[in-house]
Length: 607
Ligand code: ARG
Image 1 (cartoon, rainbow, N blue to C red):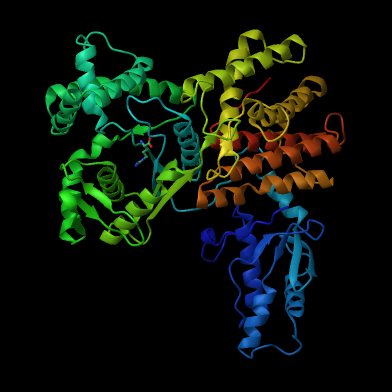
Image 2 (cartoon, protein in one colour; image 1 turned 90 degrees about the vertical axis):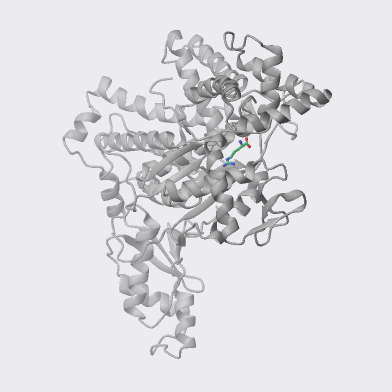
């Protein structure tokens, strides 16, 4: 098993609340305090606690003794009788004592590692606190955040790249909101490009009655292609199109009207996808920043940061970049760079964002590095403000090439979602036929949507976004393995144990909660499940730092494994420990549901 280093970034200043849900923080504080008491003149790094490399030795380990010994030796301050890091470790273990409130089974290993477990009584207390409640949130200062995600382009079909941005972005927003941050969910729609010149031209040519008869989106992508063809073939058409751009961007009413018609058609289609995927966005398209660009250019000019390139283009060079940002093109027009700089200023100053996250495919990484650097250089960014770009990898077909339809076209998002749902419908209908299902035919579609969309999302979210992946319906709809389908089934299994307890044994979990029944961790599988449940705090802590939702996927997957082991190894129904064990089922389903919520996956009660 890979050992994850503790995350120094979110270790706050002491004193740490020993009930902080982030275990790593609590453990770090305990050891820092202990080193401080026993060896006040030593220095130890904050990253001294991590998961134990060898589970036989413990749950966690502390690696502070080695640097502490080295620092004491260097300063000539080694206390009498301390001649090795092992002895430092032993002294700390002795100081912590055998009946510590949080730690148990302390031992020294190898060159001076301290391995230990979390005391069962402490874990018991922690899971008891979950009964009838929700998962704990770390105590952090709420921030204003901006998440720029999804951001498709008008008149173009949303493709799998936008799907990735949409899925990842929605989950990132949910995680930030969960811990109490305020999130502006920005949809930076491409609604102001030069493509509108030719689209408007084509609209006038092809649909003279467009104001009465709106073309629909499938036509609009087709429409885009035709307009592009006319643009490439006919010099006259091209010339008028280019003139149109100027007219539109300088606010000509008739052109704005045509532009709006085109935008509205696209917008409606985008919204259909968002509705299917339970995604919420707030549109701040490129056009929103148009009138804010001149002031930005002026500000850069005032700071002497603009260099005029050949043809008169206004550029900003940032350290380390091969190409400059172009704030104004030689034809005086504004482009992608101009808009993004105006957007940054708006987000930092008008919205007052302390954290800005933009989610696009990795190929735009350099662009955002440049924009963010330029914002720093001109002095827009305070010490507390953080700018992040999440660049995700490509979605590939089974052949390892860019994901395409059989005929080589870009896969339409709606078709892809339809396919996932229809495959799921078939498998549910089979389940009904074989008598295994707990749902009626009428419920199939709704359940298939929940599972189908969930499967598409989880398949994406479960890996590091920077990696490419091969799109595979079979892979994502597999009932075994690390899929949403498996997880949703697993959760339903715990639900059905609780339902049986009520129906066959007359024991209602709701009653147990009301009566304050206690969880007792007797069996190792129960303790292991509790340990996994309690790892949620660290999972959220880590996710808040890099904003990769795969930490939550890993967590919920491990949780369901620990839960399955528990119900396999510990009889619940009719056992002496039934009440305690039912409560464990209850907190497990609650935790899984919370994770599904954070990932944007609908849960199902019965399958
Ligand atoms: N519309 C762009 C695209 O489809 C993504 C925009 C991302 N956000 C931004 N502020 N540039 O690639």
